[in-house]
Length: 261
Image 1 (spheres, rainbow, N blue to C red):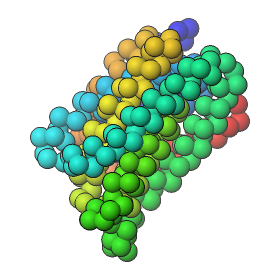
Image 2 (spheres, helix red, strand yellow; image 1 turned 180 degrees about the horizontal axis):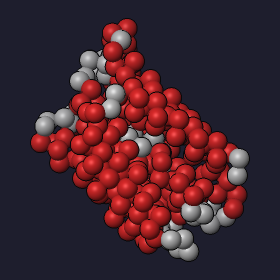
Image 3 (tube, rainbow, N blue to C red; image 1 turned 180 degrees about the vertical axis):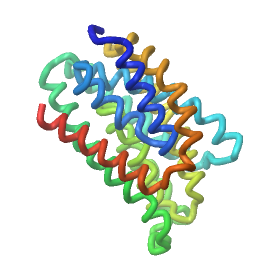
């Protein structure tokens, strides 16, 4: 790692602060920052971010468990699709030679489009959560519930293993569409806890391919822990809609930077 460690700590603090305020943003912000801001290759940036996300999300999991914010049935069906999906993508990455420039370009473009989707999901989530018109799409009591949830999990597994983005904002929005009667706090808690084994598994796969920058990972964690603590304390002082718009703009900006490289 040939960039000043202080800047990485500061970036980790900023990401942690955004996560503490909004509940999303770790994967969406970290990977493009590592690529565009600090010059890591896309495969190494994705691998480093996956382990970073698994650790940061684990710090929030105990609180959601304590508050009973986890729907374990939905989580199990998500994991049934996501873990095999991530494993399949990692196998493809291994045989495709993860260090090639062509693969880096694929990851960069896939990440940019995932960021656009995350930005839209971040802004649309409150609107989807408020409108009862989605109640007709509630699949919990139909035979399609398990199939839809497993398919969602598989899609998230593929996307997260390739780009490190998708387990947060995108997952919550799709879960809102599938389960509109479920409380928002349980949707978010379920999504966060589901992301822990998914990002950890994908991170281990990247570790096995030598695609982790442990120096960057350590400095990111050093900054993110106090950032999350402060962000969680000030979240009630800033309107939720303003936080979401600000985060969406940052994600769009990061996506444009990636596409222009």
